[in-house]
Length: 172
Image (cartoon, rainbow, N blue to C red; front, side):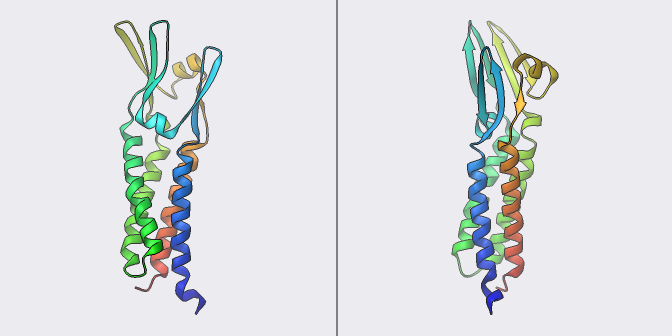
């Protein structure tokens, strides 16, 4: 009789893991040394781009990363459906499977975030773009990868797997 409702607890665990993945998106993903200062940036900053610094007429910024954007966009319905699956009593099997698909795809794309990110340096009318993890960028800005996007990916992946397990145990 105890196993009859275990899928509800697993669905709740999936929703909690998805919430943890969302929190991990705010954990630093990359650090750059700019002058004498070390700046850390989250997965959101790297994915959506934005100006890092402007000094002496030069601008350094992350370029918009479409893969990171899609990863975050896929996460939103996955997270919402994981919450619905944990709260709803009927028809949770299909909701859990769809949630799992969104969360697992989001995790896979987030693992690719740093490899596909670029830095753009603009000075006057001239600009250059370099991959974030290229040797040039690492030498110029002492680029160091951090755990943010990896932890996001792991938590989203575990949440997706938990959603699949919840669907398997659900008899509805």
